[in-house]
Image 1 (cartoon, one colour):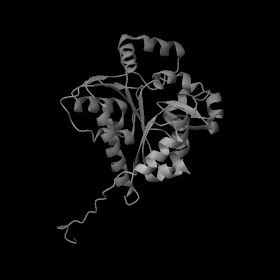
Image 2 (tube, rainbow, N blue to C red):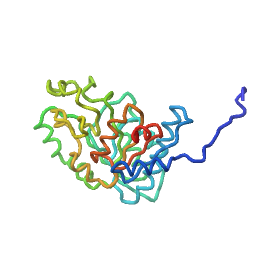
Image 3 (cartoon, helix red, strand yellow):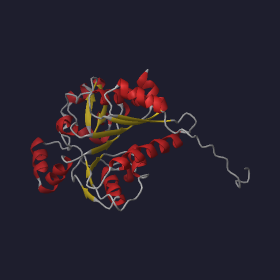
Image 4 (cartoon, rainbow, N blue to C red):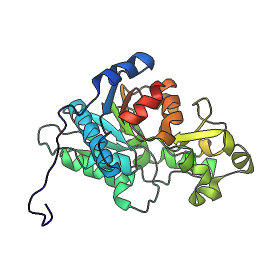
Length: 268
């Protein structure tokens, strides 16, 4: 071992906690839950295990002709990177919201949509706009542009939606990049907001907050998003428990992939 010739790895036979999955679906309005046993794993290994579990679930749902909507972030990237390449299930992948620049470009929504479509030899539909547009008339004009309109029409055919969930610590209201889009009313209401999904900021009840910013989002409207049959959130971490609970109870998502610690807190 000291010379790195021999490596010892313990493979745990039961990678999922099915009893906790059942408890979650009994407690919350979830049609499915995946709880990964990560109590013996490092943080990096836990991220990998949750991403793998998300990829397995997504792979089962994606059949030929499926339309998948996808967001952005490191968590979603861990899922996408573990999807098996398949020749027999051509799908359509939709970038669900406008572009947001990240420190890691490979976790941006355009790249994740492209990578997923490539893995399935499918088609990709880009939403070629920023995540927020300040001017209401410009926003409406952009949404009517043929290229964006085509993407939004395809988004309305979605049968699977894959997203992460933003916590209070990553609120758009606290992101310097979005400061030009915020009104004084938005800044005053920041303390009453708990998280975000698809660029929409959520209030303490899990509804879209009464913010000017929420009127500037370039994405499918919330009521249309909630009509998608499979709305999968891949999210974990103690800091995200309050907003995960609200996102589930308010119907933003109806399937959850998480780890054991997060599930325990959701059930507490």
